[in-house]
Image (cartoon, rainbow, N blue to C red; front, side):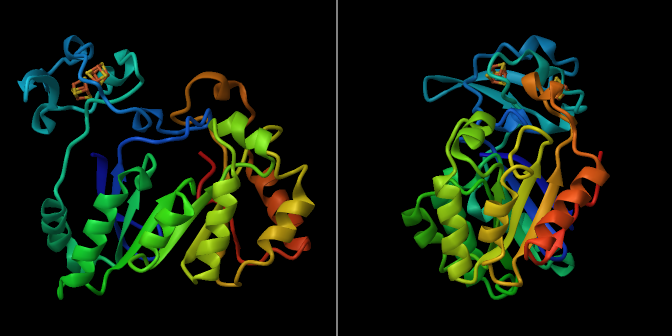
Length: 286
Ligand code: SF4
Ligand code: SF4
């Protein structure tokens, strides 16, 4: 179940990448910039009247209602998103592995790799495994690196299934203390910490992403603990700082302060002074 496909991206892993954003997430981050990726549409049909171009229709399939989105008629006005009682989106599509391979083959000469993102991509673990195995088995695609962008909530058993077929992963660390992480995301961060350690030990950790929300995420107050953990990572692992902004955010987080370039650079300097290496600053503060 796919929310969006971007045929070329240079911010979702190394080089030029084909990125698949999967629908559905097991976190409910107050800071989410794309909250419509969290819940799955239950085909209630409430959004149909809001669509000015009749891009949405309700059919019955296997005795169940199903909302169908016609991409060709959609103008991306996003009115449907504003009325959905689940804050979900009808603008998702199901793809088979073969359908994605066809799209990837069309771009292959311009790509360094594939990134599966979300939502939380690992909620669709069997599909990711099938897709990455198919890429590795295809002589024309096998050179593409297969990477995962994840909130880190997958169990160790799940990561063990992925480790043989992924080339790397980008993991979000939204906060250091359990309570703060639970406040921001709805879940604790034990699995995130475990995932970072496991991927690092297997040489599959490409990047850890810290979300800096002044006064909310606790990286400023937990500097010593965070730095002593991050400085043990292999030197090639990027520590990317993301500066919280209001774009796309809804609810409580709209009242939170955004992270300025000055504040983010100050955090970077403080982490660096404590021995954290390979810190990457945000490419944008919008
Ligand atoms: S975003 Fe597309 S599907 Fe949604 S209301 Fe607008 S035109 Fe219709
Ligand atoms: S997107 Fe929301 S409003 Fe539209 S059918 Fe799905 S659950 Fe209902």
